[in-house]
Amino acid sequence: DWSMAAFREEATRRIREQVGQGRVISGLSGGVDSSVASVLIHEAIGEQLTCIFVDHGLLRQGEAEQVVTLFRDHYNIPLVHVDAADRFISELEGKSDPEEKRKIIGRLFIEVFEEEAAKLGGADFLAQGTLYPDVIESVSFSGGPSVTIKSHHNVGGLPERMKLRLVEPLRELFKDEVRVLGRELGLPDSFVGRHPFPGPGLAIRCPGGITREKLQILRKADAIYLDEIRKAGLYDAIWQAFAVLLPVQTVGVMGDSRTYEYVCALRAVTSTDGMTADFYHFDMSFLGRAANRIVNEVKGINRVVYDVTSKPPGTIEWE
Ligand code: XMP
Image 1 (tube, rainbow, N blue to C red):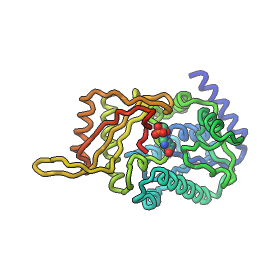
Image 2: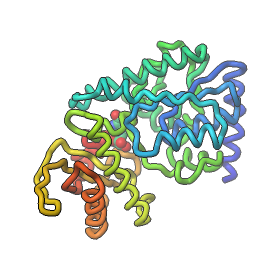
Image 3: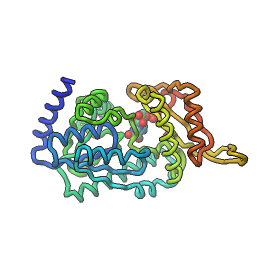
Image 4: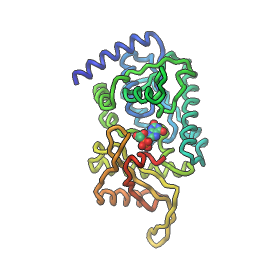
């Protein structure tokens, strides 16, 4: 893509000019925006950038490994992988209020990130994958002059507290342009085309009290569902698809014994910006296949339902 090649060159030039000899840290979430921003900044300033990946233990199956492999092995970008799962999950255990979950996750994220940045000896700049729509959104919501943090990253206040200046090389781009830039930078299609994933991760797909066991059950069901979606060639036609583990147990039958296990809800929507969405119209045979596999392969789930609510009035997530 010619224009994206030109953008890439201009953006790296601007990053070098802004940063000079300064040190930059970047919070990697595993998502497309923070990944593309980090790869671009690394191209501009090399080892002056260190990425910090706070792994909160609420990612999907295999996701943390993918991020680490991509950055360390493929790009050779300095990456601190903080396995903070125990810390996050022990504070979340038993918590069921969605906003309380988000607050806990946001606070711990900042704590862990600050600790790791201090271990690195501090930095001058914080890299963020802010996009144009985020800039617009924060302006219209806050009206404030320094529109900086993507609210959904749950890191509000971090740059001010740490006295960091922001490097936001994607500020002029829309999501689809970020994907083009990602491909231009050599990020694999499987990574660039990923569905959006919320910062609080599986914590908000586990309504009711969170436990390690429930997260493990949810992770397995979600992986099977996405595997079936990919096999059916539907992944790219869907905006987001995921499993939700309901805090409800129902009766089932397995062989000649009665079971009493959790209900799993499946969600899939089409959308262009996440603001409105339609539920995805799967073939019933697809849903039957996914449900069968989940009930047969995941201990702890004996019933599967499909969410046919659009947004509005529903939201995409269940919490
Ligand atoms: P809703 O559920 O509000 O979701 O229809 C719209 C989009 O936002 C994502 N989402 C979040 N992303 N932190 C995030 O980073 C959050 O707390 C959060 N809540 C919702 C959701 O996945 C969808 O893409």
